[in-house]
Amino acid sequence: DAKTTQPPSMDCAEGRAANLPCNHSTISGNEYVYWYRQIHSQGPQYIIHGLKNNETNEMASLIITEDRKSSTLILPHATLRDTAVYYCIERTSYDKVIFGPGTSLSVIP
Amino acid sequence: DGGITQSPKYLFRKEGQNVTLSCEQNLNHDAMYWYRQDPGQGLRLIYYSQIVNDFQKGDIAEGYSVSREKKESFPLTVTSAQKNPTAFYLCASSPVDRVYGYTFGSGTRLTVV
Image (cartoon, rainbow over all chains, first blue to last red; front, side, top):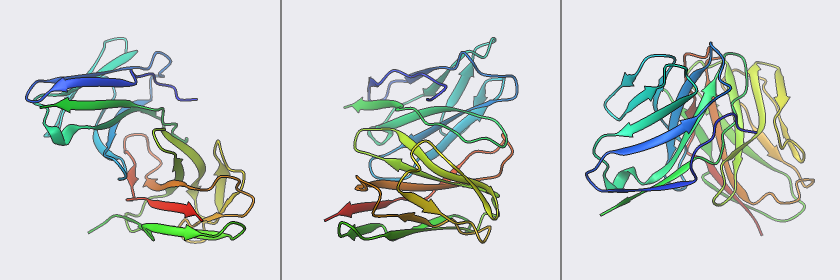
């Protein structure tokens, strides 16, 4: 089973910030949190990852709580092209990664 | 450009036939993975390999086989023993270190006719 939990679906108005939550309450100290997204019938695309600190890149921001038990992916100005399934996963070295069902984000015009 | 290539993009198979899906990467990644995705579902792990000539079963390995003779290649064979093979198949690769993420191929859509 996946080690993370996410809401199955969310809506966001175009131009607004999309905040996608993820619970990873059993995360260990050496596991990174990764976010990917998958547009229909394509391979998942890397978005961002982090260990303890908040991270930002050209696509998104990642906010990790101080206890590391949850995180939020923020798409600051959602566009219709951000409509996709978003996966939050934990990554440790030398281990397989289990993907859960993710969050289906719909950006509404 | 470095990347991971899956071929073919679409594949049709008659019931009872084995079929092999190709996955090649030129990223020098040690680990490679095969996932299966059914409509509206997440990714389920079939097999993974962290080093040449070694691989492990994932959660749904029955009816599938793999080989890892070269670092760059990780082909997946869907055998006739797989009862419901119609699905979208994704290959991924990564360094084994946790600080690096996965790179995915564009997928192969297999349909049994």
